Image 1 (cartoon, rainbow over the protein chains, first blue to last red):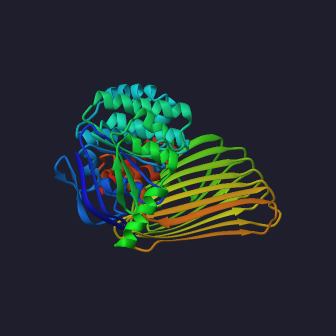
Image 2: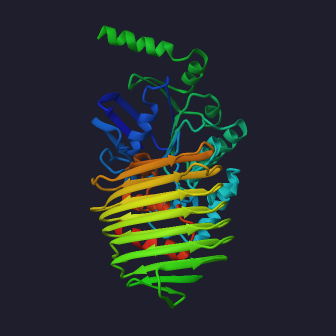
Image 3: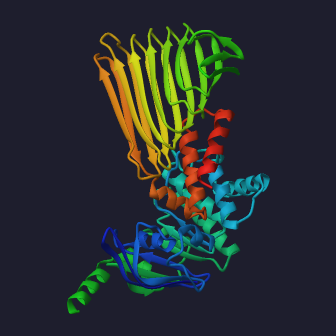
Length: 253
Length: 250
């Protein structure tokens, strides 16, 4: 279970998140929505401990363990996985070398080449990926859609217990979206204790991965939490109502 | 593979000693060059007409002063893949593209642990000559690099192509510099250059660490990729690079 309490975060001396609270139970699907620039991607990186973001107040707990000061790799080893909006490109590092290193680091054991190839080939096939992408440099020259599929390939191989999808649907064509969402759905069915945090602007992902809770983020904090009907309302009417309400609240204070 | 060894300022080609400082090579051949125990190294290497030569160079010795001139003849191509792992060094390399359709491809990777000064001069002396230069440097510990690269094209050397790219990754607080120059006195020349000095990108480190890879392992992966991808795959050079990287980033 992920528990974020009273989080205050800054980047370059600017407060991005303030009084931010969020709880995701095991097996729960949670959506985080909000207009551009309100800190949705920030929270995903803060959960993983990106050093560009400074936690000024508050705590992040995962399965009752305080992780606020843990290095990124240790958080990943606890089972937290972030599928990034813009995955990094790394010159000279082959996707295959990276995947095998990541698996060996995460599971803290040597993985035989044959076992790795079998697992990798199966996942690549399920994601309908071009198999040559495995030999290429990490994300180097990959299209937007290929990068996103490569993120989900990593998810399938690293077997996390909390998955954060940061705009996984951007850059994907309709067919690729279906493939990616189906793969995530299948993974959740096979691993029912796995939690999911979805950051997205688009309704299609919620048709495949229906959230249990929907949270609206504005001005660095959650301003509304409800069930799936909230997402439907946002797709219909936008965020104005919640931003106005927050502005009014600020004036009253 | 043919082997050239320069040991205590004596040149051996396939274990046969040579009496002067000039090496003349031709045909379609690959050579591996190793320097050993030279105080001051001076070499002239000439590539004959209509040749296609590959040189793999590894230098791990303590030579402090290296001067090498390459002369490339008509319709010839020289490809150099070079890896240095050295302490103090001052090196001047001059590459003369003397005749039409001569070409140099120069890929250099190094891990620098002390003060190093490089001067690389490429002289386009004839029409339709090509130079493709790629340098990848990592500084560690006390490592400090001053890298000057001059590409020269004289008037009349039309249809020349020159491409120079030099990158330094610093893993220390010591200042390193690149001085990239292109002196072109001819209108019909295609030229491009790129030079960067900087640290390892934080977003790359974060990306690898977010997959459970610990920081030292992530650094190793990034540096290995950066240095090896610059050099055409050669098991001898790659093994050398990996051994040295493993020593620094455990």
